[in-house]
Length: 30
Image (tube, rainbow, N blue to C red):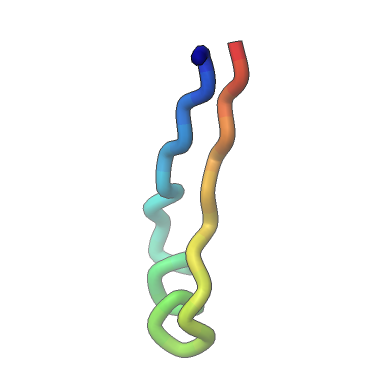
């Protein structure tokens, strides 16, 4: 279980997230 899912927090992503209701996720597999 070495999978880390982190929400990408950026100004563009938050603005698009508010309008498009979409979230960007950074998936790290180790």
